[in-house]
Image (cartoon, rainbow, N blue to C red; front, top):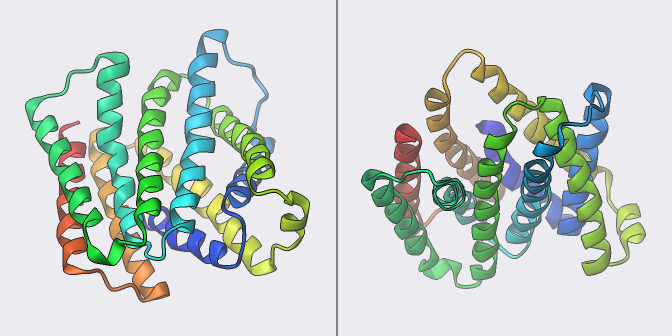
Length: 273
């Protein structure tokens, strides 16, 4: 969770070094793909998995990282973006109900409602008046992360290296195309990336995208999903602490109040999911 939480301030540091946000997301996924190639068995899955695998790869490998980097690019304050990412859990539960007909209990509805109330409180913080576009992109990031979790349930029988390689492949190619269309000057931007920025991008690819996920998969061998999921509520706490240490961000009272509501609601959603 410390590695997951560090993803946001580390990405912001790279963006502050003038790395275009979409190109940075593409390079991150490209590094993930390169590292996973030796472990990829190049086994084509059964065609019944194709729709879910493609939808998952685009949601997780493309849209989540696009909107994550855009939210940080258009925000001068990072902590609300970190807390906003917690909406992925309520969005995921709502998507499960709409797409695969899962039942939502009354307690879950209540916690979903309170999590959105907490986000609204953060939105109305006067300190964030110039960061609303970033918060909007953070909400889209959470939405597609939640959708990705729904698609992932239909891929549980596939090899993990195949799924992660698919994410890296789709993410790298699609994000590179989007960067070329929107940001332009792709080759020039690539050549201008400094060594410090490459280290930060490599950290995101290796420590966050690979090591953190591998550690989670390792835990799944010994503990149930219900035992592990509540710990996801810790990553915004680690992220906010690191943001304070790196950027000296001091949370406002309004943000702390809204953040406590969101994190508590999501923690309880994990406990009863």
